[in-house]
Structures are given as C-alpha cells and as structure tokens.
Length: 203
Image (tube, rainbow, N blue to C red; front, side, top):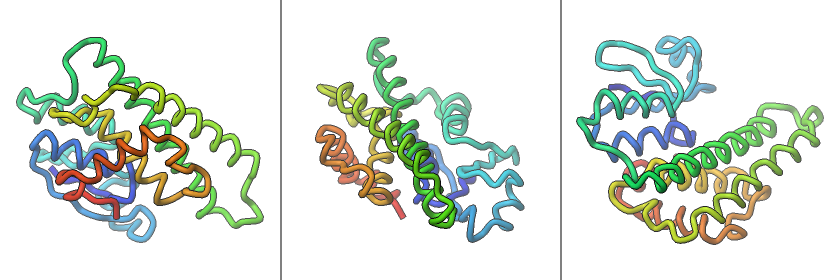
C-alpha cells in the first residue's frame, strides 16, 4: 500500500504510525497538497492528505477510514488498544477528542497562513481556540490514570493524542501552552521518545 502526504500533517502522521504499529507494510510518499498540488492531484484529484492507494489501485482518503480499512483488511487479526469494553469506549472518546484538537489546530494554521492578515476573521479564530481548549481540557481530565494509552498494543487514542500534542506545540504555541495540560504534555513527550514515533517524526 502507498501512503501519500507529509508528516507535518497530524492526519498523515497518525495513519503512518498506526500502520507501523500494526506491522502493515506501506510505502510513504511525502507529497505536499500545496507545493506539489499537480503531482498529488494525479494520484487523488480531491487532493486530500492522507491518501492511500491499495495494492489493487483503490484510492482511499481520510485517516480514520484508511485506518478502518487497514484493521479490517490488512491487520491479520492484530488490533489496537484495550479489549475491556469500558476502556474501548474511552479509547474511542479520546480518539474523537484528539481528532477534534487536530481539526481546530489545523483550522487555526490555515486561517493564519492562507488568508492575508487583514482578511483574517478574529471572532472565528477565537471560537476555534475556545473549541480547541475545551477538547484539551476534556482530554486532560479523561487521561488521568490511563497508562494503557501507550502500553502495548498501542491504542489509536494514544497515537492520535500524541500526534495532536506535537502539532499544537510546533504550530500554534502562542494559542495553546501545552504545559497548561500537564498529563497531555507528559503523554506527548513519552510517545515522542519511543522508537516508533522517532521512526515517523513530525517534519
């Protein structure tokens, strides 16, 4: 399988880390949806990262759906995260909160980088920042005592939260101070110190 997109995208990175965790072979092609638009469009005209191309040539998009496909079709019974139903529910909730944090952080970056300063809509940026901080506050509460997030087998929530934390720290440190969420910051640091995350680093 081919995975197309740059590792500065939290969505591309969570997909790469998940495939690596599941020991699913894939070839990573680091194409930018901005700088290499035409090359990306030749693979996927929607130009959405990540894009995956199966061995049969089927083009897939959206990190969650690519991961869903990988678990159903390629993982040979390997799974992510806990097996206790109560922890599975928390893992799904935390994955959703992590994805919400990614979404709001990416929206902030796009508003700042793609719009001229005089056309940026400050009320929108404030609303998005509020949503981001609400997601992080919920994460900070819910991960108390959740050491299983980074324990083998690595959970989807653990991957997603750590990727979100690094993206926020790198791209919008003036909007969110990660140390204001000490459990979340510690989880991010612990994940980034592992060989797996170092093999697929934020670009």
